[in-house]
Image (cartoon, rainbow, N blue to C red; front, top):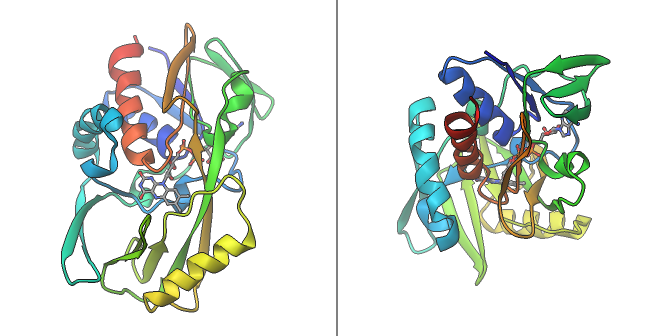
Length: 260
Ligand SMILES: Cc1cc2nc3c(=O)[nH]c(=O)nc-3n(C[C@H](O)[C@H](O)[C@H](O)COP(=O)(O)OP(=O)(O)OC[C@H]3O[C@@H](n4cnc5c(N)ncnc54)[C@H](O)[C@@H]3O)c2cc1C
């Protein structure tokens, strides 16, 4: 049986690795720790209503895989009017490959890749986020950047409507800290975006951040992208604000329908 070699240990690559192993096959993940990777910054939240109608099938396809592989938590956030909203949550730290091979994949072909001067043969899954375009000419993947901030201590989960189009979330993503994100997603990101996000955090009583998590969400113009690009090589990206759901749906498609 072939091994699945994965380029990228973000949510997309790690979900594919986890599901491949769950099905009794071998998976090896390469990740070169590119600055600006999206997954370490992700809140890890999802809910059906975040999926526009055209993305609903991905949600329903992904959920059984996520339920099988991870404990899904329910996070209650209190709104400005005292009402509560419950979201589903899997911390990215529970999904992300703990020890990928820390090497840059330099080239990929049909059923092979090269990294660290070595040649590997098997199935290949390219899940390289905004860097995926280098492996498929013509793929117009681009990033929309945003920063999340960490604050000391565990505060009550809250959701705050900053303006008509912007919801700010604060909750305990990782023990001992409070994670804040206002959903900023910009193609051209400047320091001013950081300042605005921190001002919104301060409106929720969160000041003096102890950490900044900056990442580029991958977008592809015609929507999330999954394609067999050679007989034994696949590429998936375009996770936008729904990396957990889209990564899981594509992992399921790869493992259940393609690897044989
Ligand atoms: C602030 C913020 C909050 C978010 N919140 C959520 C949320 O609550 N829920 C949700 O579902 N989504 C959320 N997202 C979106 C989510 O993070 C992305 O959709 C998802 O992480 C994309 O995953 P990916 O694996 O495709 O890309 P990435 O996470 O960018 O991973 C790609 C990986 O490929 C590696 N790589 C690239 N090229 C090579 C190479 N040649 N060789 C080896 N390795 C390579 C990089 O180092 C990188 O680690 C959020 C994003 C941000 C920025």
